[in-house]
Image 1 (cartoon, rainbow over the protein chains, first blue to last red):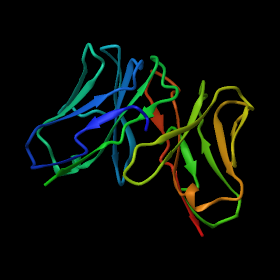
Image 2 (spheres, each protein chain N blue to C red):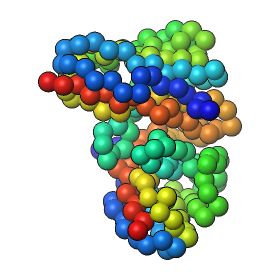
Image 3 (cartoon, each protein chain N blue to C red):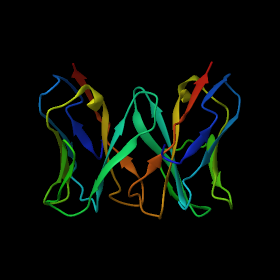
Length: 113
Length: 110
C-alpha cells in the first residue's frame, strides 16, 4: 500500500459527460501528479500541483482541469468526454517539488461508452 | 520523439535466466527512477539513482546509472515468475515535467 488513495476505482460514463476523479496523497506529501495510461500510449504526464499551486503541465487537454485543495487532496475533472479518453488515470504524490520518488495510487479505470 | 527510450520493449525468459533492460536518453538527468507495474495497478518505486556511475542493488536486481547520467540499466539475476511486470524508468530533465519511458514488459515463465 503506497498510502495514496484514489476514488472511484471504476467509472463508466457516456460520451459528452463530465466526471471528477479524486486523489488523496500520502501523509506529508505536498506534490500531486496526474497521469493517463492508455494501452497504446504508455504513462502520460498530465499535470503537477505543489502545495495548492500548479507547478508543471504536460499533455493535458483543454477539456481536462485539475486542482489541489488546502487539505492537499486533488481532483481531476474531465469534461465533454470522448471514447478516446477511456484509460487508467493515476495519481501520484511526492514530498517536494522535484519529481524524485513518486508514490502511485491504485488508479481509476475510466470507460467512456 | 520519446525522451526516455527503453529496450527491449518485450522480453520473455525462463525462470533462472539473467536479463538486462535499458533506459537511454540524449538528455542529462539529475536522477532516474525505476518502477515496476503489474496489470491494472499503479507503478511501484524500486530505486532512485542520482550519481553518475552509481550502482544500487535490491536483492537480485542491480541498477546502474551511466557515467554521463544519460542512461541507466536494470539487471535481474536468476529471474523468478514474481519478477513479471512492466518495468518503467522515469526522470525529470527539464521544466519539471515528469517523464516516463514506455517500459519493458517482462514475462518470466516457470
